[in-house]
Amino acid sequence: MATYSVVDLISEARSYLHSDHSRLAFTGTTTSAGTTTTFVCTTIDSTLLDRKEIVFTSGTNQGLRRIIDSWNNSTKTGTLLEALAVAVGDDEPFQIGDAGFY
Image 1 (cartoon, helix red, strand yellow):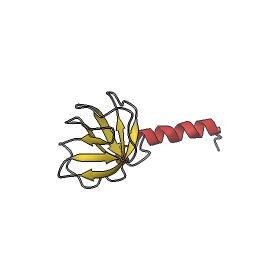
Image 2: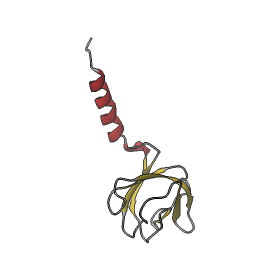
Image 3: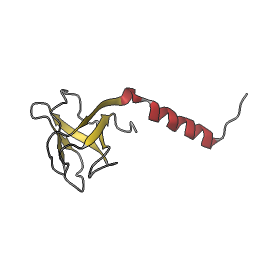
């Protein structure tokens, strides 16, 4: 029987979690400027984004993640549970998935 250190097991678990894209719902880019608590993306057509997590992958909020409090599919606007330090700009790439998908 092979033995593994705790560090090896944690590393393996992280590797597995980072490669699991089944919890990743959307990738996209904002299509209009938002605010510190809203983002706009006209290319998303879903009613299932409430309580998902958004991570900005580039732009002024790169690396920041927030929980989506609510998504309005008719206005294509998401409202964040917690404000960002800087307003979301136009053309900012992001990923949306289950909370903790990264």
